[in-house]
Image 1 (cartoon, helix red, strand yellow):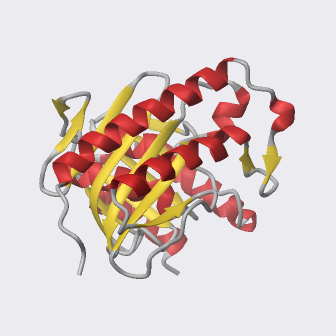
Image 2 (image 1 turned 30 degrees about the vertical axis):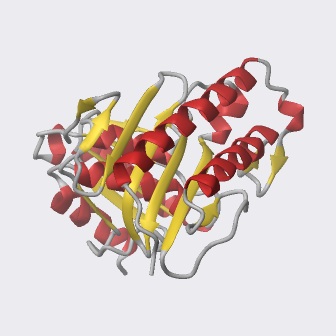
Length: 267
C-alpha cells in the first residue's frame, strides 16, 4: 500500500525542480561544445547535459517521494513494477539543443501503474511551465489553458515527429504526411514531443501524432492535454499510448485524425 501523499505539494515541488534544472540546461546551452555529443543511434543523440539534468532531477524526486520508482530516458533510477513511478525526460529535444535551436524542455510525470497523476513540461527558453494534476485542470504559468475549439481537420494546424528507428517505414510515413498536408492548414515538426503535447493543450496545435515514442516522451504532456479538455489515444483509439509507441493527442478533431491514420497503421 502506497504512503499517502499530497498531489498539490508534489506539483509545487516538481515545478521548482523543473525550473531549477531548466536554468542549468539554459546556461549550458550558451557555450555547448557539439564535439561532446554521444550517439545512441544514427539520429539519436545524447549529451552530458541530458545525463547531468537527469541525475539532478532523479535525486530531487527520490528525496521528494522515496516510495516511487523511476523510469528515466538515460537509465537513472530503478523502475518499480506496479505502484508509483516518476517518468522523466531530462531534456526532450536533444537534437535541437545540440544544434542551438531553442526548442527543448524537461518533462516529469508521476504515474500510478500507467495512470498519470501529475505532469510538468517546462519549456526552457520561453520559460513556459505547463502543468496538470489528475482532476485539477491544465495550467500554463498560473493561467488555466484549454485545447483549441477548432472542430475540423481542414481548419487545423497539426504537429508530428519522425521516428529515430524503423526507418524502413519512412516512405509510408511521408505519404501520410502528404495526406495530412492536403487535408489541414499545415504541418509543424518542432522536435520535442513533450512541447508538441503542451502546445495541443493550450490550443497552438489542434493535434499531434507520432509513432515509436517512449513513455518519457509523452507521460507528462498527455495528462496536460486531457486535463485541458483534449483526447489522447493510440492510433486505434485505445488508451494504451504510454508504452505502445503510438500517440495521438487532439482537441476536437480526434475522429478525423484517426480516419486518416488508420490506412497507414492499422493494417
